[in-house]
Image 1 (spheres, rainbow, N blue to C red):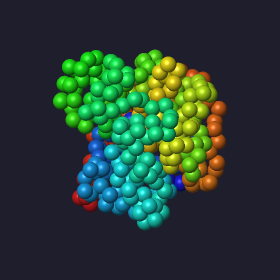
Image 2 (image 1 turned 90 degrees about the vertical axis):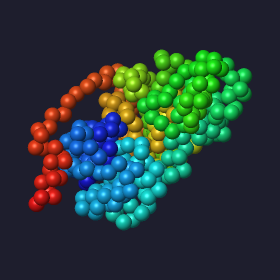
Image 3 (image 1 turned 90 degrees about the horizontal axis):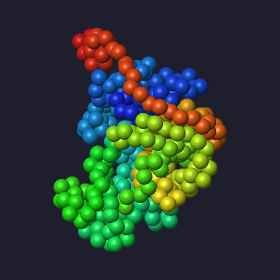
Image 4 (image 1 turned 135 degrees about the vertical axis):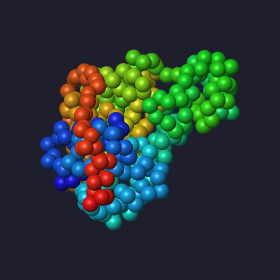
Length: 330
C-alpha cells in the first residue's frame, strides 16, 4: 500500500508520518511540501515539492503527483489544505482512485471558525465557551465579567490570542484586530486537555484524552490517562460533529464542565504523541478505509510524554530542490 502525506514541514504532517512509521502497516510513504527545507520531506520513501494551497496551481500539481504515484490514501498535513481538499474530495477519489482522509466542507467550516465552533456546540447543548462577536460584548461582559479572551475567528497556534481585563483593553483589541471572537476565560492552564476522535458513518468509534502543557501554542508535555467521563463527553461532541475520520477537540475544565474552545477537523499535532499511549489513529483510520476493519477502542496506557527537539541532517546535494533541478536538466 502507498500513502501520500502533504505538509511535511508542519508539526501535523510530521506527526502523521511518524505515526505511520510506528504502525504495523508496511506502507510506502510519499511526502510533499512547498519548501525543500522541510524536515519531513526526508522521512518518506519519495518526496515532492507541492505549491501552497492558495496557489492556483496547487490542485493541478497535486493531481499530477497522484496520477504518477497512484497512492491508496491521501492525508493532508496542514490546516490550509482542508477547505480545498474537502471541496474536491469526490473528484479526487473518482479521478485518481485515491481515498482522501478529509471531512465534509460543512464540518471543515465549523472547525475552521471559532465563532461557528462555539455556536455549533451551544446549539447542541454541548460544552461550549460563551462567546460573542464585536458589537455584542456588553451582553457577554454582563454574563461572564472579566477577564475575557480575544482571538481570531480563523487562526492557529495561539497567534493573535490575548486576555483582556477591562473595557479599555477590549476596545483596543477590537480596534487593532478585525475578525476576532470574544470569549469567556475558562478554566486554567492546569485544566487544559486535548482529545482525538475517530468517527465513521456518524458514530464515534474511538477516543483519547490527554491533559497537556502548552508552549507557543503547541503541546510540549502530555499526560495520558483513561479519563472515562471526559472521553464520553468528547465522543458525544464527535457524534454531533459527524467528521469523516479524525477530529481534534481542545478543551478546559471550567467548574468541572469540559468546555471545548477549538475543534480541528483533521489529525492533530499530538497524533505522534498519542501512539505512546497505545492510540495510533492513523493506522486505525487506514485499516478501516482500505481493508474494512472495524475501529475498536484501544486500551489507553497511562504515560507522561515529554517532547523535545531533534534533528534531520541532509547533505546539500540531497535536497529535494537539487534533485528536482537535476530532473529538469535531464
